[in-house]
Length: 257
Image 1 (cartoon, rainbow, N blue to C red):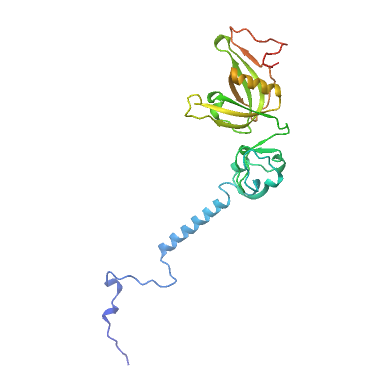
Image 2: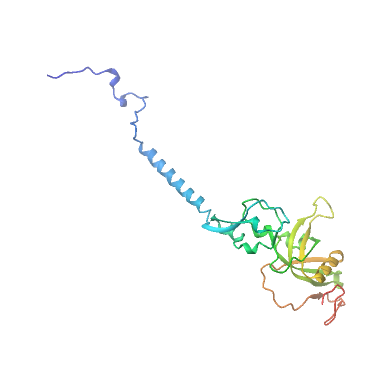
C-alpha cells in the first residue's frame, strides 16, 4: 500500500521563490571563495619569506650592535659592543662592522641606540695612527664637496692665498680624517652656505698651517677616502703673473716644504 502526502506550500523549490537565500551546507565552501582564500594564503607566504630574508638580506649574517645607548664623543669599550646574528640586508651589513677589534679604538660621532647596528658613519676609528689633535675651521660649502662629507672621511686640505694673478694654491695637509661636519646658522648672512669642519691632525705643523690659512686664505677640501695615494709631485700652484713664495729646496712661510 502506498501512502501519499500532500505537498506543503512551504516546500516549493528555491528556484521558484526569488529572494530566498540558498542554504549553505556546513563544511562546504563555495568554489570562488576557495580560490580567493588560496590566493591570500599564497600572498601571505610570499610576504613572510620577504620579511624573513630582510628584503634581500642573508639569514644568519653577524654584525656588531650597541649593547647600550652610546652618546656622541664616547670612547667605545668592549662592554658597549655585542655580536648579533640575523637576516640583515647586504647594504646595511656593508655599512656596519663584523670585527670587534675595529671598534675598540673608536669614538662615536653620532648617537647610537641600544641594539642598533653600529655603522661607519657613527664612529671615528683611529686606524692605528694615534688619537691626534682636533681642529675646527669654517669653509664655504662649494669648496667642501657641497657638504657631501661625513665623519670618518679623509681629505686633503688646500689653501689659496691672494687673488687674481697674484694667487697661489698650496696643499697644506694630506689624508686628514674628519671627525664632524656641521652647518652654520643659515639665518645669519655671514653664516649662509658655510660649514664647520672638525678634523684630526697627527702632524702639528699641518695643524698650524691649516689654522693660519683658515684666517687668511680660501680653503678647499679634496676627498681622498679609499683613494690609493700616488706620488706627490706638486704641492704649490701659482698664477702666471705671481711671484712664487718659495722655490725648490726652500721652506714656505706657512711651513710647507
